Length: 147
Image 1: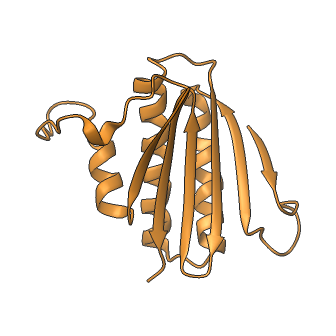
Image 2: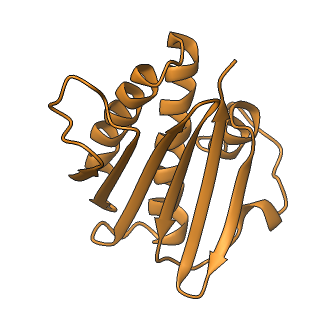
């Protein structure tokens, strides 16, 4: 995982923006999630919100790997998080199939069937989620407002 920030992460003041560039391998999910959770915590979110933000980022990336890249583990994913006074804005850019998940029919949730909770979490815990098709993939924007 390669991180690009406005300031080095090692400074005493957390940056206002962080950018992560990773390959679409599931092994990268935990590191990205922990980095975003730390960023959200330093941005003033409480423990519950930090956990929800981390889970949503994890699910968004897992969906990119599973659906946009059809399981390929060697494709790029770029994630940017910006701390603004009243909200955290996160964008996930992929170069996959460009399918907008919000246009697909929502299947009923079955707790006995694996999967299917990613979009539910995103809809419930983000304010809002916007999918912007790109000529060569998708840009997903997730906003979490501070209470």
